[in-house]
Length: 283
Ligand code: PRT
Ligand code: ZN
Figure 1 (cartoon, helix red, strand yellow):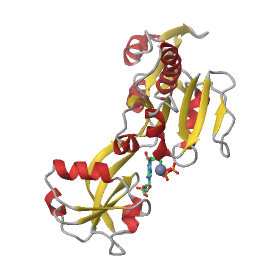
Figure 2: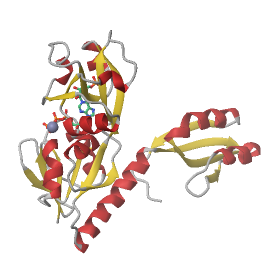
Figure 3: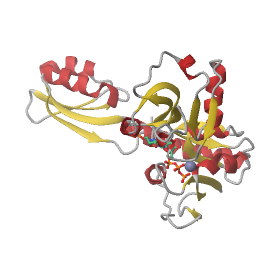
């Protein structure tokens, strides 16, 4: 049995639950529960505050956990990151009052910085030989300069709208973060086997979400050109259509190259292009 810790409620909860579901693991919704067990995988799930997850994993109370990298590095516990999960993306940044002149990190010398990330802020400042006063607060960091509590803040940013509405501007990025899967360092062989089984499923889900299945009709005399644009998992599937001059071509395209490839396929004579999401992809 593997014990997994995920956030009880908050920004990472829904995506963590969705990931388990996409991995084919059934667990009942734990909104009001502390723990639950999967019905079809040897997995117990603990619902915790995100800040507590690294400690629980270090102590092997939970074997693995889903938490933001920002929390992993701030807590600095003895845990290993095993997989980046692609959700909960944000950055930890320093922001100052918008009208203020900022010419570089030395502008923070002697200033007061409010943050919920004292460890990472201190680390960044000392790396840059800046001495500043760190004021630790647990929430609503963005209001600190407005109420005269600090000159600057160090906080998580995603869209940037919180900074904007509080009259602040982002001046330094300390860390880019996303949700990650962490583990403790004393796994036995059974736990390694179970984690590998879970990772195999996570990889299939991640790969699928980065790719699309594409079906199109190609004039047979343009087949070579069209096939050269389509990598496929090995090579594209080509099936003859009832109309002798046409073939149906099936392939897989990655999200990154998707739009550019579709334009080139159309220009090469492809018609009736269908794009279908892939649920799982095992290569
Ligand atoms: O109750 P618990 O302690 O578990 O939750 P929490 O309140 O500490 O954390 P929560 O749910 O707010 O965030 C959980 C994790 O989500 C964080 O540790 C990050 O890894 C990730 N994440 C991603 C974010 C954001 N994006 C984010 N934008 N966490 C917080 N924010 C906040 C930020 O602090 C600021 O107040 O959103 C505001 C900025 O957002 P923008 O879009 O206006 O820039
Ligand atoms: Zn928290």
